Image 1 (tube, rainbow, N blue to C red):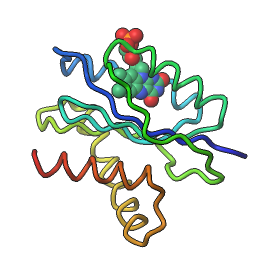
Image 2 (cartoon, rainbow, N blue to C red):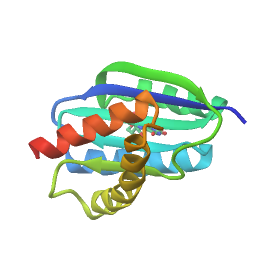
Image 3 (tube, helix red, strand yellow):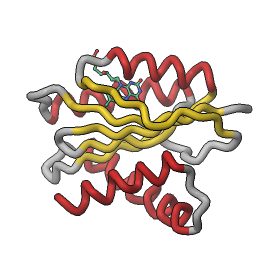
Length: 145
Ligand SMILES: Cc1cc2nc3c(=O)[nH]c(=O)nc-3n(C[C@H](O)[C@H](O)[C@H](O)COP(=O)(O)O)c2cc1C
């Protein structure tokens, strides 16, 4: 089966609260689970970086939801390509905010597990450009935290 992989950067609208992020998280996780879409959403308090992958049609449906969201602007697509084997088996989200909600902390813990695998893969030179960009965004986020 062919999978579509997309990575983009966007700017959060001003005034997003922790509750807004929780709402996004619950809503996105539920939709992604049904659609079989996996990946990572990183939020540094100003910008979002999202990498997601899933069966072609479902990935497009999720992408449309993302593009229609009023929670961000200036969506800048960085990568959009076809994969033959999915790289992520779950959907994760990580925020830089150390005072995030319980839900955000839980998602962050899950992401830290996936991160180890990703670092290994990219370190061995087998990561795609989208995964390298994801890791670079994460490392910048950690450095300024
Ligand atoms: C950065 C960002 C990432 C998102 N990622 C997903 C996603 O992976 N799957 C999904 O179904 N919706 C996703 N959404 C849509 C949100 O779930 C939706 O925007 C949120 O529930 C609030 O709805 P509203 O923007 O119409 O107010 C995303 C939205 C944003 C801003």
